[in-house]
Amino acid sequence: MFFTTTKMSRNVLGLLVASLLTAHDFIATISSQAADEITIQAVLTNPIAYQLHVVSLKGTAMDVQPMAPAIGGEESPCLIVGSGTFILDDGTASLRVGIPGACSPGVAALPKEGDRVIVQAVIHVHEIQSSIRVEALARAIYLVDRASKN
Image 1 (cartoon, rainbow, N blue to C red):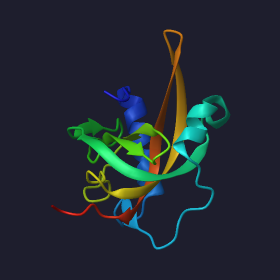
Image 2: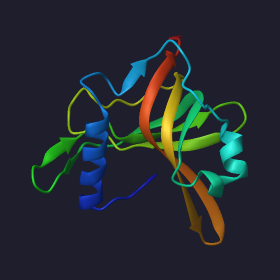
Image 3: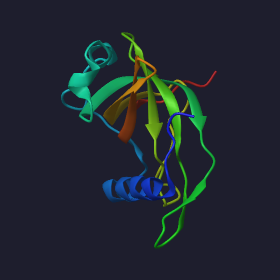
């Protein structure tokens, strides 16, 4: 699993995502590119420089893994939907992206396999047994081009 959270942190993530979203889908179609796009290779080359920074990454969604809905919220419980992970590949490198989901059905959505997207995400760097692991937690995903159906 990409990330594990406690019930309270899952609630905070759900509230954060819900507060960042409007009534539109989490994946929005855009006609222009997001400002300050960087390559995944730039993040992986110097991950500490990007730790807890919001970045814009453009690439293709691969290995999309939805997570089962989960109950979140301590004061007003809700069903968190739309959470999961995928690999973003921009041609320079690839990076696992986590989507925390939201309490509102239809608000959070995972990209489809092969979709071209721009992801605004917070970079998280973890040291695990003397190795560095870099992941991104999506704040917003913008659809650039829907994957073609074969």
